[in-house]
Amino acid sequence: MQAVQNIVAETEDLTVLYYVGAQKRTEANQQGITRWRDPSLTPAAVGIGCEKMVPRFQALLDINRESGGPALRPGDVAAAREMEASPVCTRQPWNETHVRNELTTRPRPSPL
Image (cartoon, rainbow, N blue to C red; front, top):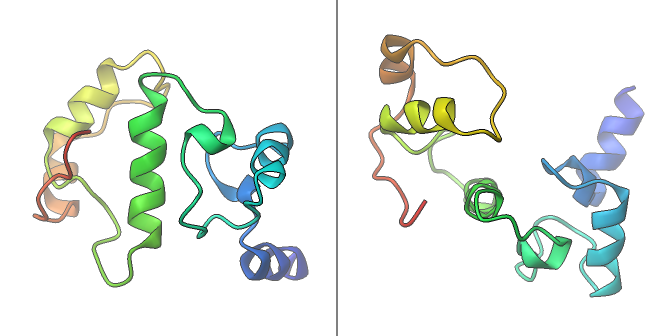
């Protein structure tokens, strides 16, 4: 198992990204995009066009490409309430006190 994790980390395989499976990886590969850190990787490059998924996927790319910043964002409790109301999200709502204590105070990127 450790060997697989090492290979995936070393190759920066696109399928480690949420919502990217083999088919979407193939679409990106055909455009010359083989690593998730590639600046050319966008939601459109992997065939994500859903109005709700585009900003979420882009936010995942942005936060993982940054070095140094917080591990979580946005730092606004309202984000958890928005996720709760989203038909795409199937997770249970967060306890707002927990979210308030765990999230950073970094400003929310715009627009999300």
